[in-house]
Image (cartoon, rainbow, N blue to C red; front, side):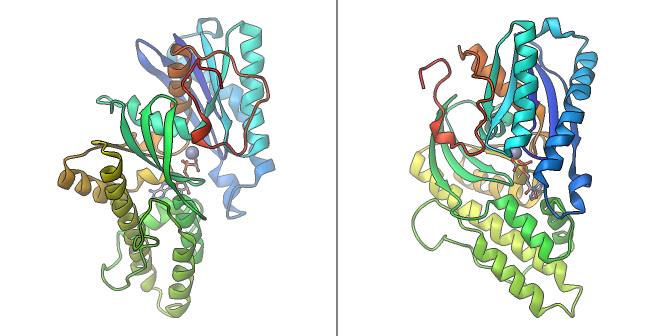
Length: 341
Ligand code: KG4
Ligand code: ZN
C-alpha cells in the first residue's frame, strides 16, 4: 500500500509518500518561516495562501523522486487537525479532490498522532505500548499509548505549550522566530549556575505542566540584566535547564505511574539536544529505552502524516468525510482504526 501524506496544519507544507513494504519513498518540505518572521509569529491567512501555492508542486516532486504516478497511490492522508482552520482546509481540499478523482480513500490524520508515530519511521523503531512525551508549538502532552489509536492523556499544559514557551522566551531575548532553535544556539554559550529558574508544578503531585510563569520569570530576569548583553546566553541556558528538568521530573513520574518501560519523545521541541540529553540520562538511570524522531521529522513534516495515514488505512480505517477538519481536537478522542467513533 502506498500512501501520499499532506501536512498543512501550520507554517510548513510537507508532502511525502510511504510504502508499506519499502518504507518512506520520498518527502519534501517547504517552510514558511521566512515569510512569517517579519511578524514574529505565524499569520494564519498568509499561511493558508502559501499552502495553496506549495502543495501541488511538492506533491509532483515526491512523485517524481519516488518514480511513481498518481495512479500508483492507494490512499491519501492529510492533517485534519488540530491546527489553523484555513491551513488545514488546504490540505483537506487537495486530499479529498485527488482521492475523489483517483477513486481511493482520503483519510484525515490527527497532527499529534502523526508526531507521536514519527519515531517509528526510524531503523530501530519503538514498539507499542509506550509512554509518549509530545512537545510541540501547540501542545505539551504526556500520553499513555497502548496501541494505535489507544491513547490516554496523563498530563498536559494548563497554559503555554513547551514550544510556545521557547518562542516567547526567544522574543524576550530579542531572538528570531521560531525561538526553540535560537534559544538552543544561544544557550550553548551560557554559563550554568548563574541563574536558577523555577521548575513549574514539580513540587506537587500530578503530570500537568504550566509554562506561563517561566515566561514571566524570563521577562523579569531579562529586564533586570538589560544593561548586560552577555547575560542573554546565561538566561537562555537557565530557561532551557528549567524546561528540561521539568520534563525529566514529569517523565520519571509518568513512567513510574504507567509502568511503561519505553519512552517516545516527539514534536518540534524533541529536536532540542539538552532535552534529549536529560531524557537519555533518565533512561539510563531507570532502564527505560528512549526513542526520538530523526531531527528532520521532529518539527512538522509530511512523512509522519503519510505514515500515520498508512497505519490507519492498513488497520481498516475508511475514508474520512470531506472538509471534516478539526482546529481543536484532543488526542483522547481518537479511536482504534476501523472501530465506530
Ligand atoms: O511540532 P512543531 O513543528 O509544530 C507544532 O505542531 O506546533 O513544533 C514547533 C515548535 C516551535 O515552538 C519551535 O520553537 C520548537 O518546536 N522547536 C524547538 C526546537 N526546534 C523547534 N524548541 C526547542 N529546541 C529546538 N531545537
Ligand atoms: Zn507539529
